[in-house]
Length: 157
Image (cartoon, rainbow, N blue to C red; front, side):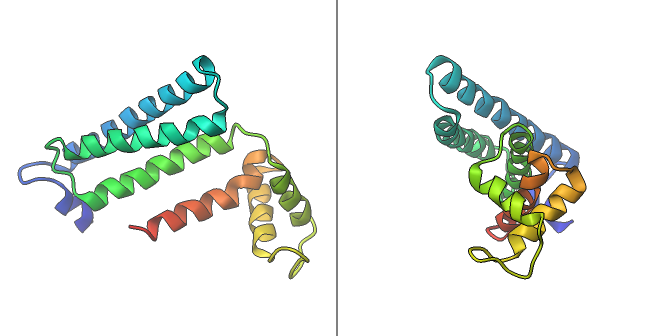
């Protein structure tokens, strides 16, 4: 709770801060989507190549919003960015096909063991957990990686 209390400028309410962070995240989402759409549909780039410039533009937008007199505490902005990244990853995981390596992980998660020739068992266990929760879908296979990526993002705060 102290994070939100310290994040607002004197005289600002928590609601104002929350609305500001929400507006910054929505603005960044729209800009990022627009950059990806521009590069993939108009310029003919692959989706994988378009993600890098879109992420850079998103970072610039969020940095500018955070320094334009908003008086947002840096850590609160980082927490909002992690939440924003999680939201984008959920959308991305729900729409893509599995890579060959991910299909391989799904295959050996169907036969759980204490270890495998070329991988430790945690990947198989995480994939199994995701497929138990969300079925044998792409999102179910990628759910463990999504959660691990989000948790590891908080270690950098």
